[in-house]
Image (cartoon, rainbow, N blue to C red; front, side):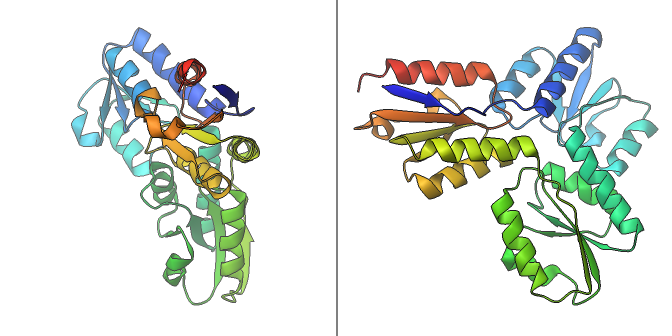
Length: 278
C-alpha cells in the first residue's frame, strides 16, 4: 500500500519538553508523581509509568516526593496546596498554556468578563479557569446563553481549537451586542500548521488515519477536520486499532498524528501500512 505522511505531525515542542523534564526528573528522584496524565497518550504514559512516574488525579493522593505539573498546566490553588505540603514541584506546563493563564488573569484584573472558547472538561481549560476565577466557558453556540446580557468581554480560546471554530464563535458573540469585546488570539500556531497539513493530505488519499490518544483534544480536532473532507477518516491510538474493513479496496493511505503522539508510534503504523497486502 502507498502511504503518505503529513508534513507536520507528531510531538510539538511543549510535549517534547514535558516528556524530557519527566525523564530527567525520574533519573534523579526516587518518587515522582504526575498530577493527571502528563500528556494525552496512553502509550507514552505507560512507558513513563514503567520508569517510575505515578499518575494521580488529586493533590490529596500525594504526601511526599516530587510532583510534575503536566503540559496542560494546573490551577494556582492546586499548586498552592502542593507547596503547603512541602512537595518539590517540577513545572512542565506548555509555555503557550501559561500565556493563556496570564492573559485570562490580566483580563479579569482589567475589568473584563473572561470567556474561554473551549471544552470545560479539558485540563488546560480547567487550569485557565482556576487562574481567573469567575470565567465563562463556551464550547459551541449552544453555550452562548451562559454569557452575561451586557458588559465587556475578554475572550481567549483553548490553544488546540481551530481557527475556523474560533472565528465562528467570535461572529456569534459579536451578534449579541456587547459594549466591548477584547479578543486575544491564543491558538497554538503549531496546532494550526498540523491542521492545515492534515486537511491538505486527506484530500489526496483513499483513507486517512489520525493517530493519537482518544482523550487528546488536538488529535480529535484533526480527526474532525479530516472527516469533513474525507469520509474514510479514522482516529486510532496505534496499529492495534486497525480493522481490515478500513483498508479494503484502498490504494493510498494518509497518516497524521496529534501533538502527543511519539515518532515510534507513527513509524510503526506507517511500516504496517506499507506491508499490508490486502
